Amino acid sequence: MEPADWPTVGQIYAEGIATGNATFETEVPDWEKWNTSHLGDCRLLAREGETIVGWAALSRVSDRACYSGVAEVSVYVAESVRGRGVGRQLLQNLVTESARCGLWTLQATVFAENHISIHLHQQCGFRIVGRRERIAQLHASWKDTILMEYRHQSAGK
View 1 (cartoon, rainbow, N blue to C red):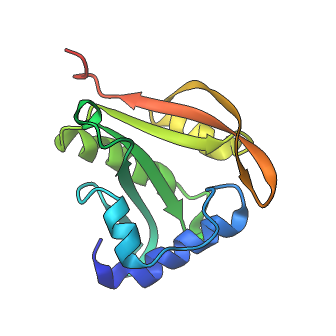
View 2: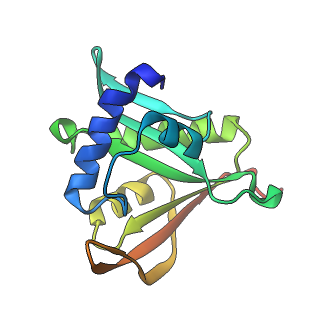
């Protein structure tokens, strides 16, 4: 993913934000803010021909050295191609690439009512760790989230 991809990537992000079911964010950040909040490795794009139709990236869960191998997953798919396996392909590739980059745990925070995303993560090997009740508000409504994780097989060995 390059800065020149940001207009399309940002539009896909905006489509996810508009669902009210994908993130607590309410606005798409500019490239500089997004870029500094995500790891430089493991930024993936899905394309149909030359058109970007989805993206995946990782962000740190903590600045503490002991958590340097733990990252949070973001996967967004253009509305026009949802339900066609793009998200699964992105997430599977993100899992593979994260191992190559030395990460040992991926985590995902999914709104409790987003059953499609929960199912997708489970299909890609994530497990449910727990439910965080009323963790934060979106548009003045409290939301529960499901914390999920993927542990690479080499983790802890």
